[in-house]
Amino acid sequence: MIALDTSILARAIAAEIDADAATKAQRKRAQALLSSGNQLFVPITVIEELEWVLRGAYGMAPDGIAALFEDMLAKTARRLGVEPPVSAPV
Image (cartoon, rainbow, N blue to C red; front, side):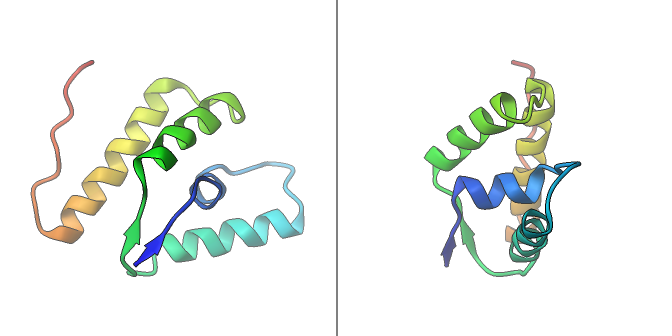
């Protein structure tokens, strides 16, 4: 099992318009890892930090972050063969 850190997830999610070649290559590698089919582990502290990075550094709206996390949970549930969690208004 591969444990992911915040930088891998942030790099895979955030598309930087003026990214240099190295950053674009890192994004491509991070996205490939996420779609590789390997078992991945994301500690809760990474999720918390990812929210902070997406909101603070990339200016992502809270609703967009919530939708992103819900999508991640739904994809995980489908891979495990269980019903995706139902989102509830906060």
